[in-house]
Picture 1 (cartoon, helix red, strand yellow):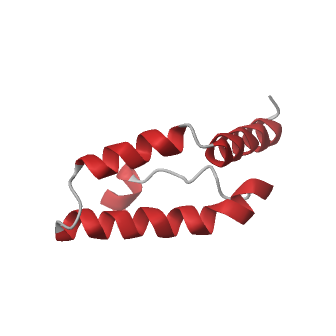
Picture 2 (cartoon, helix red, strand yellow):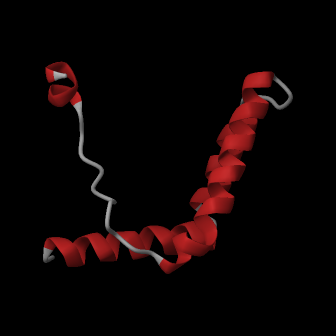
Length: 79
């Protein structure tokens, strides 16, 4: 228990709200899990993961979700 306490990091996203995440995140998480499975099973090459991540970094929903979460965090932190 003590070892976990030394190494654990709080999840600062708990309690933050993003309307875009509410709508988009479940589908995004499913796609990520599906792709992980395909990579592990070898049905798609490892490069598919890098391509998907690069695509998601520029996806308008991901960008908007990230900005909403950043704004919510800053508001909570009083920034």
